[in-house]
Every structure is written in C-alpha cells, then in structure tokens.
Length: 359
Image (cartoon, rainbow, N blue to C red):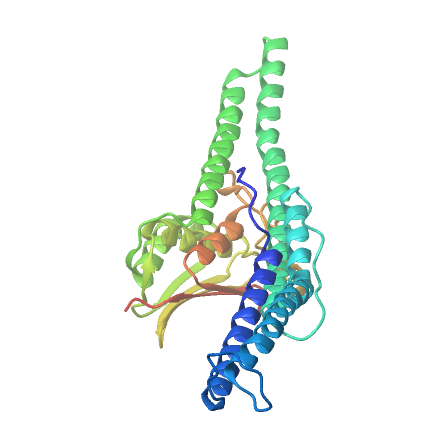
C-alpha cells in the first residue's frame, strides 16, 4: 500500500523536544520577568538614573530574552534530533528484520542486547514469532511433500494396474477391480483426512458441550469388531467428562486413538483401556494399550504427519494413511488442550488428552 510521504518519527520527536524546551524556557522567562517588574519602580519618562527602573529593565532584558529563546529552540532541535536518533535506533533494526521477513527470509533474528525495555521486549517477541513461523513453514513444506508422495502412490498403482490389464487380455479383471477399489478407498481416506486436518488447524468449527465418556463409548462400539478380530480386549471405564468443542472432531480424536491402540497391539491377546474422568477444571481422556515396546526417542515423532511407529500387522480395511496421531495433535491444539504420550515399561503406549472442562 502506497502512502503519501510524511514527517519521520525522528523529526516529529525532535520538534516535540524543541517545542517543549521552548515553552519551558518561555514560562521561565515570563516568571523572571514578572518577578523583576514587581519590585522595580516605574519610570515612564525613560529618564536615566542611578537606580534601576522598568524602562531600563525592558530595554536590557528583552533582547537578552529573545537571544536566549532562539538558543533554546536551536538547542532543542539539535539535541532532540540526536536523542531521537539514539532512541529510535532499535526500531530501525526491527524494521529491517521485518522487511527481510516480508521478503521470505525467516532464519534471521534481531538478537537485540541490553537491558529490558519496550523496544527490546518488542524485538524478543518478534524473534519468537520468526522462530514459530520458520518452524510452521518448514512443517507445512514437509507435510506438503509427504502428502504429495502419499497421494502419488495410489495413483501410480492404479495406473500400473490399468496398464497391465490393457496389455494382458487374459488378466483377471475381477482382481483388477478389487485392487483398484482398495487403492481408490485408500486415496479417498487420505484426502478426507487431509481435509479434516486442514479444518482442525483453522479452528473454524462450532463449539458445543460434549461428554467424552459418551464419545469414548461410541468409538469403542465402532471399533469393537476390529478388536475382536485381532483378539484384543477393549475396556471403557470412567465417568462423565464434559468439555466444549466440536462433537465430530472429538469423535475422530477418540476413534483415532482407540484404533491406533488396537492396530499397534500385537501379538494377539492384548488389552486396550479407555478411561475418562473430570479433574478440577479439565476433562481427561486416557487411552492405554499393551503391545511392543516403544522407544522413548520415537515418541516425539509419532504426532508428525505420515510418521509411522513400530512395525505393525494391519488389515486392508484399516491400512491407515499415516495421519492418525497427527490429526489428533491438530484437534488437540484447536481445542486448547494438551496431548501426552508416554511409553509403558511393559510395552505399549499411554496417551493422555486433557481438554478444558465445560463450565
């Protein structure tokens, strides 16, 4: 946006300093003038004598006062210009850093030294913002690259199947259709997960009162056939845990956590425990599963998009798209909640979500 050129902040400050100094000097001269005239006798005839009189005082004091005022004004302008420049020097560094950020560079930092003041507080806040933006942009670029790769894979498989079926008339078409349907289903699931992830990141959803215990029961009922197929016991305990948020997103959050606990729970015969409770001003959801040991260094990466944890045995029906815990993390952020992942010493994982309680 182009604007008309105006006075710089430095010049405005210099004029302000000079004006204030001139006004202060004028008031001081006025006080001295009034005080002197009060005790000096009047000599309207302008006769010269040995004793002081107002006529002589006016003739002698007025020129000196005018010179003093001119000096104060000039001194105020010069001194104000210098002082304003020193005071606004940190702002020039912040402006230069903002312009670099506007040009696309997010790796630089102001790093302003010195004692704490308003400018240094602004610089520190700007550095923090740049750090978060750089991390967010890097995450988005990595996510876009991974999403492109994940979406390209089913398309490439579909193209290969079609080429094989076209070149070999004897190829089993039923098998082609079945495999194409499976690949297409995976692509649709991935696309829907990406759209839901984008929606939860924006946070533009209607909030309502949701009981996590009811959501947990619904998710467990949906995934019970999968758990029984794998020989895993699915147990839901706890009491009411009301919170404010999107019922759809919270259902997806719980479903993803329970499904993740089921498909990672091998060998067969394991257990998945879902517990809900209200703690003070928070509502807590805890999903715990048995299974293989999870390395501690692997835990921080589990919530990144398209990051898969320990080796698993999964059915085609629940092949997953690598966005389960990433979507959970996004929904948690959108609801102002916290997500904790802790490996169990005996194997498996404990996932705890703390959401603000509904008042």
